[in-house]
Length: 484
Image: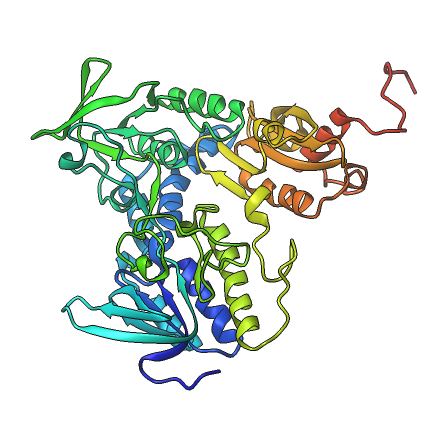
């Protein structure tokens, strides 16, 4: 460990979101010193504008609808959603956008904090410009880690930028529900915010040229579309050609007609937050995603690392935190001359980023998936067998809701006899995905999975039904029913 002064540390982390916090924590746990540089709130997007506030906005409406789908509970639920109470609960989760508790955590674990905008200005050197334009030059003994995340992408639509629409930040931090909301995009943010705001009584229109959740199995988008339409969401396969700010809100030209709404949310993807962090110092182009190897080290550098959204491997908080643990641990190992375990699935690599990424869209209904879709698996050259099963046919699901509707899909690599992709769509399926993740990461043979007996009657019975549908070599196949 190097000698630490007010400006010299073993590792500098640019950013102080969830990913950066985890990198720095692993660094100090490994016996080195770390400083994080942050121009906004410590805790980042996940804590204040993404994961936590968005799921808080969604959950109350989903819980109310779940109660209404259950005999006995439905008769007891006679009121409407209290929107003000939902927004107040969301505010409590964000601590009213005050980061003092997270600052206290940094201090408690021994991570230094410098407020301001950090830029690479030399080899293992970061210059921080504070809000009063004063500067602090930080130097690192071993590494600099970029954890700056990503920003919303605004598509090239006439008038859109000047109209200043909502981005996901404004949608998740709003203090009231608009009367009407149009959403451009059909991905996870779009369906989640549609689910939240239609619950608040907002008239919601989704403008998604290619439909919803196109990166998921095809039935996922179909089931979510059907459900959102039943809730009152207007879903149009169309793209706006022009947007104009009006006194009452926004005028959006779609298919030659004008749609007028109070608020407009753009949820069409992300761009790297890397345009002004000094990437030129290491020969990289400002504004680009930072390409890294599996130890999260920037390609072409021996001291720059990048974890989280900015490396474009998997734009998900949990995956970024997974990368962060590998990043912090490998930096410590290299600094102290310890062995580096960089073989696939080793201690110091983020192997799961490639084909074992779990994700959940907290839409109505939920979509939980991990690994490859059937289409992606075939395109990757796998010998694929696809197994589908209706979730509503299992006892555990029928107990969750009367008339439960949902579907499961298992994608099997036939050559190896292992699962490489699983998708669940339905109420409360988010809690099923970890078992699928373990099966994929562990490459558990299908034959062995038969011995992982699901408790009855739970939703996990879906595993038995998927395996039965797949079939078991050497086992007696079910025949006609006979009397005892």
